[in-house]
Image 1 (tube, rainbow, N blue to C red):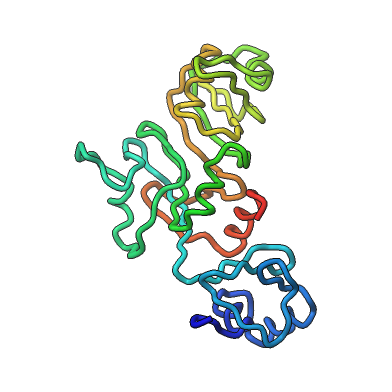
Image 2: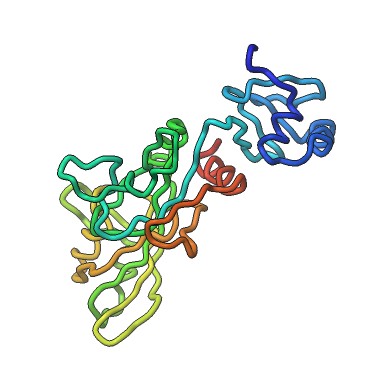
Length: 241
């Protein structure tokens, strides 16, 4: 392996701990490489090795990038727009790697977008069979009648097949408008807006606040941040890696 390096050095470079602490993890049998328990003296290629510590995936390839971005309303979720509209690439000019966004978020919606150059993880996060949940904060005209949440959880027949929410919660009620939280695991185009239209509550504002274990938090519109090792490990866990 031309790019191979000692496992404890690779773990230390990935931020798992010092080389000494990484050696102790290996000696304790808490590290696996490509499905087998690692031993002291093992060498690995960080660009290809699949490493777990205590069952959690550790990304050791320094070329891989994982970002969270708060997409502002009106910005197109694409790296370049042929019509010249403001696109997410306009906010990522300090990122040298070629990255792409995971899934969609339409121009009128805002909130959390994940961006990466890890094609394998991106595919699994987007594929409906992996069932990664997405959480949305939705503002609609109020007041809201009783039973809407049960109706959405039971399932709504749309023109391209049935859809349902995994969870529904009334967050706040104000004169003339209501704030609700929806959790669902599919990503069909405009799915949240279409569901709310069907039950009689057209969306006036939509913010995605979480994708699986990664939360938007207090990230300001237009800003991005690198995911920490714990968040990346949680994403791999969400897709079964």
